[in-house]
Image 1 (tube, one colour):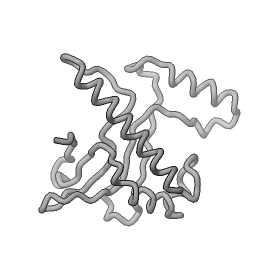
Image 2: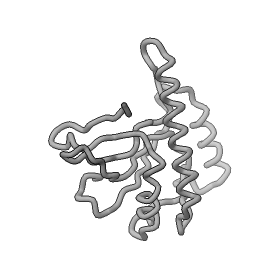
Image 3: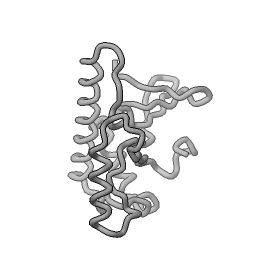
Image 4: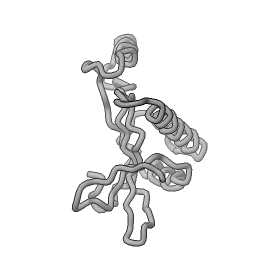
Length: 154
């Protein structure tokens, strides 16, 4: 069975799940919506199928790596660098799932607010080299969702 986290009532039909390659068509549609993409700093536009496939492969690999770590540990798993359950799905009464979006909790990897390239690179390297669990790690949320989806994403 695929792991998931269900939101509490009244949204218990909304789940965080692992990414799936079958999400590609939806991700492509959302990432090529001008109202969505205008809020991102790094993805290319137009967002092509190869961009989407590469991104999904990376997210699936991150999920699989996290699960290997979790399953190999006896006792407390400790800290992870990311949230492996990042795709948001709505589960209907018949069990059918509808992809709603993506929410990733990761270490900050852009620091786009720092204009000086050298200072930004130094901050990025320092953040990426902090050991897991360090309270000085700067985290960020990345989201992908259709701006028409009934308010669940907000």
